[in-house]
Length: 280
Image 1 (spheres, rainbow, N blue to C red):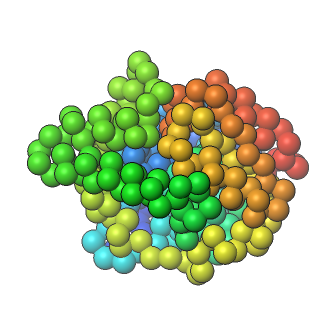
Image 2: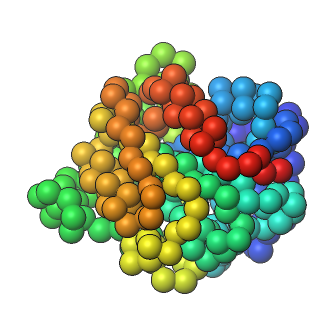
């Protein structure tokens, strides 16, 4: 991926992350999933910038950011970006892997976060114990993920991409599907081998056992066409995080903003309106 016009680079420990900033008003920070890059917000970024100060960036190894070759912290990367931009308690939108990073930041540095919109979120310390038929579900996911990685390793990127789509993005169509497939094809080392993620070091104890410590408004969105595990993990988070609520979005898969953009827009707008006082 070539960096978009207007993108900037921030030096971080052992590398650099590529980011974009636009607009003014309440700050909204957009993270991305492990099967995407910051382009998953191509539609939302300019729209939100009409009324908000919007930040999006590529995680290590994705898009325009350099891959990790030694230990680093995705939480510290986000913290460095917020400090660099002098952002005050933003609303952080964290999908999937981005949700894990957002939650860990809220626990490690609660003064830095104003609110969380978690979209089909992961979380540190995640397991399948609370999922019906958890062991069988875990083994299924591992088998399908390995099949995709094996296809890529064998040089069949098209087949690997299609297997990832069937597992995580079965509801997206048209241009959204084309964007998804392009993001996977252009970030294969991260999607299929966790090239950088394997160097990511935790910040404190896992979130799974510390959910009661989250003290910011939290909304969770999850699609009914997502991986069957995700609604259960979302409900687990909502039971643990004080005041958190879950919204089930019909017709949405793991890339909820791409499969149901109308529902995502409505949920984000309603959540923003519910938050106290605009934050710069």
